[in-house]
Image (cartoon, rainbow, N blue to C red):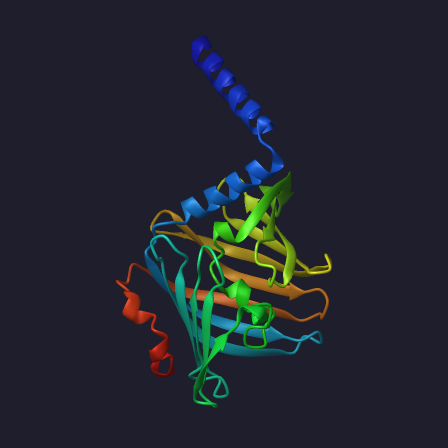
Amino acid sequence: MFKLNKFVFVTAFLASAYVGAQSAEERGLAIAREVDVRDAGFQDATVDITMYLRDKQGNERARNMRNKIMEVEGDGDKSMIIFDNPGDVKGTAFLSFTHKEGPDDQWLFLPALKRIKKISSSNKAGAFMNSEFAFEDIASQEVEKYTYRFLREDEFEGRKVFVNESDPVDPKSGYSKIDVFVDQERYIPLKVEFYDRGGRHKKTLTLTGYQSYLDKYWRANTWTMENHQTGKSTVLKMNNWTFRNGFSESDFNKNSLSRAK
């Protein structure tokens, strides 16, 4: 028993010494990579989403949509969002090809105009469908899109977290930095603070109601994005997650956006 305790003590000491030897940038990158690695391998997924748009007076509008996602080996995820109602947005479809390096490719089909609009990288900071989510928030958050700096250990909602600063590599990002509160046990984000180009705290995303799927992949059932500068907020409620549907490249074709169902 003494030998085992001594081994555990020495191992813990060496691990602590290694962490202490890391720079803030190295530790930040290591945390971001661990978050990414733990979520890799789900292949593809679908989820039903209800989006609630709330103004600063508390008035609320709801929209229903579906999202399908597919992992791409060696690159970022592909995803498609299709709006089902209300009538003024029904048939609107959004397609995103996230890349590990360089600008993402994003298209939006607007049925009222009967045309597909490409979202330019200079517009990635724009609001997605009048919500408090930007186009760049909707894309998968690839590790290569940021540089990192570990800030501190903290606690959020009773859980120990790492607070990790992510600085966008793309100069066209709408953010100067993003602080991510990462659950130390599960390596999932619990809260994300967004700072505008002037360094002012602009938005906070809180992720709650996490559930585990396939005994490995954690998904939050509620995403709440609060805009501190406008007083508006957007809430996404996720339901009916399904994984490994057998999607292929043909399921994410920009030429079929107008026929997406």
